[in-house]
Length: 357
Image (cartoon, rainbow, N blue to C red; front, side, top):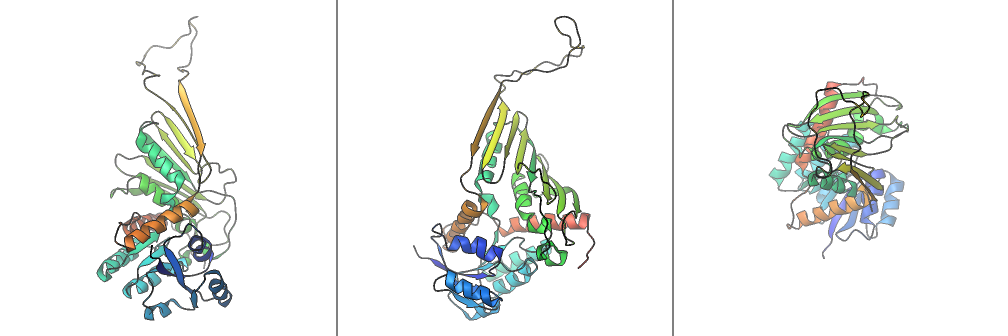
């Protein structure tokens, strides 16, 4: 199996600790890190030590004279995703862009159109779609075991403070743009990326952050004939217990991102429907009573092996390898990335926050 050469732009937490971690691992059978672009000299030296045979560069434009790069991973600062990706695409490179792929739908459409014009691949690193907990949720949803799904809650919540560049609006940051592409992407996925999917409600705020980007967000997404999807991205929730909950007409399913799931449901066969009674209900003794029953219910629980950062990353890179070799189509398309940033854009238009920096 021929390995393809990649260049990683950035050796921060994403470039090194997510992409680099996978590309250095035994799970990577498809790519060789040929170049690393990093402005920091110490990080450049570390990269050349960590990726055997790698050459470190100081500016991504140095890639333009090279002919042995099959894929460029754009793990630059979020505000640089659009201009750097555009420049790379314009020079004929296949690009995998970190999330968010850009700030607006217009920027995303520009990248998509340019990639088609130049005949190159544009992909977005939304690896959560491949996570085991998401796969299980889709299976449950489409199996009908909990009935027709009416509502999905996604909670990407925690209890922590941040004060780095990823809290600042001008850096295309804050919770909605930084963490949000994961739950927003999953929300749109549960709506089958319906063209009529829309942001029905949003409220962005700041709670514990030092920056001017949101760290306290509520978004509700809807589409005709689809479940309502309720998304939270909060840093002020010390009681966060689950990541995803689906409630249907016969039960519910709940899980977190990487360890456990549980489900409780009933069947129509074991619990025949009741006719509506319009008279007051009475006990056998003639006393008033509440309308209730003990449903014959079933409970299941289990655990996951792997999460978005190991299984999800490996599956996304495997798909990219197939695309670049002409044997597969992109599973996570740039159009999906556009719809995701479009929801982020709409949320900030609907509830803009004061710009302080």
